Length: 88
Image 1 (cartoon, rainbow, N blue to C red):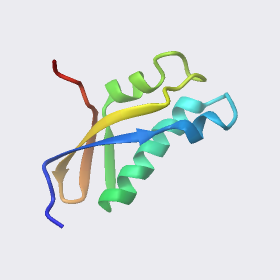
Image 2: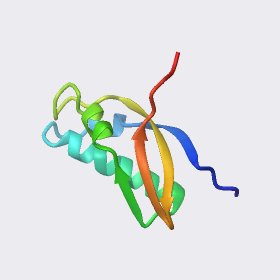
Image 3: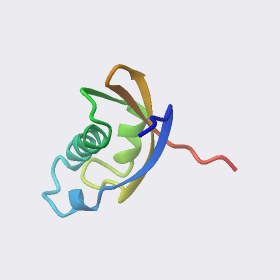
């Protein structure tokens, strides 16, 4: 499969909402890291602080249901995950 420089994907975080209320945002960030590791076979995943803040914008126990991210390759098996911003 040919690798792309910027890959956009939507990650569903509804499974996180079914668990305990405490620490949901931390679990959501770990889940995003796990999904990117699985799809891109990455050794290291760097998550942008703006993405972590947007996941928990309503508080640590009220995470968003879905998040659109852009995955960029930084180095050999190192990926950067950023929040995808829609342009009008």
